[in-house]
Image 1 (cartoon, helix red, strand yellow):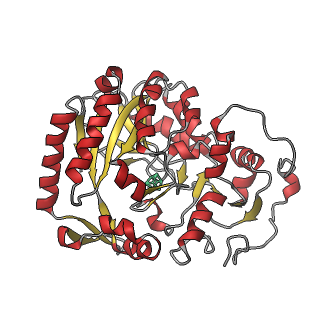
Image 2: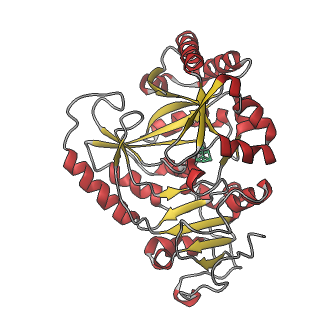
Image 3: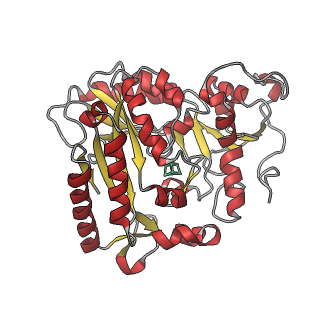
Length: 392
Ligand code: SF4
C-alpha cells in the first residue's frame, strides 16, 4: 500500500486542522539562512505526511513542527509505537526510503528513564527521538519498529529536560574519572536516532544542548553521521560532545546511505570544536572484510593529514565492531545485497539470541580480538594522537 493511503486510522485528523497553526501550503518560501531551510536539507527531508498523537500535535513543539511543514498531511494516530502502515519489514526498499524522506511521527514520550551505561556514556538519557531519516544498512535503531522506521520526535522535550535536570542534580559531582569522561557525568542523548538530523525538523537537539551548558557536572554526547551547520550556532560551551562516526569511504558509500560523506564529517570537526563542542570520533562500525586494514590505514592517514592540532589534542575515539542481525540481513538481501557481502560473513561471526528473540551476529571472539589489536596498531602508526576511549 502506498504511504499516501494508510490503512490505519481515520483519513481526516480528529483534532481539527483549524486549531493548529498551519500556514498555507503555497506561498513565499521562508527567508532564513538556517541550513534546515536550504534546498539541500529539504531534499533529505521532504515531509508530506505527519502521523501524530493528538497530545503531541497540540503541544507547543508539535505546533512548531506542523507549522514548518504546512503542506504535509496530518494523520492522527493512537500511539507512535503502533502505525502498521509505516512500521514492519514488509514492502520494498524504495518505499522505506520514501517513508524516511517524506514521513514524520510526533509522539509524547511516556516513560522517562535514565539508564546506566558505563561504556560510551555514564548514562543513557531518554532520547528526544526514535528513528532516523538516514539509512545505514547495519542500523540497529529500528529494531523495535521495523526497518523503515522514520523519525519519531517526542514533543514533550520540556519534561525530558526537567527529568534530566533532576537526574543531574541527584548525582552531584562525578567522584572520579572513568573512561566516559575525566570530570563530567556523560549522558548519551542520541541512542535511538541522529540528533543532527532531528535538528533539521525542530529544536529538540538545540534545547538539550542549551540545557546541558547550564549543568557544570554533566555533558551531553551523541554520535552522528550527518553534518548540520545549524548546530554551530548553539553555543554549547563545552558541555556537549559530538562523536562523528567514520569508516573508510568505500565502505561508507555502500553502507551509510543518505549520510554526509565521511570526508565532510571529518572536515567539520574543527568548525564544531571552534563553536564550543567537544569533538570525538566513533570508528564505527569496523567491518572486517578482505583489505579492511589498508582501507582503515588510508582513513586514519587522511584524518592525520587534514585535522588541525587543536582537534587532535582533545579527540578520543570509540571503536565499535560490527554487530549484525539475521532479520536485518534478510531484509537487506531484498534491496541491497551488495552491502550484505560485507556485513554477512557467518564463517567469521557467531550468533547470540537476544532477550527479544532476535538472532544477533558478531565477530568470533578470536577474530574480534585480532582485528581490535590490528586497529590499535594502525592507530599507533597513522594517528597516534587518537586515544581509544573504549573498544567494543
Ligand atoms: S545515522 Fe545512526 S540512527 Fe541513523 S540510520 Fe545511521 S546508524 Fe541508524
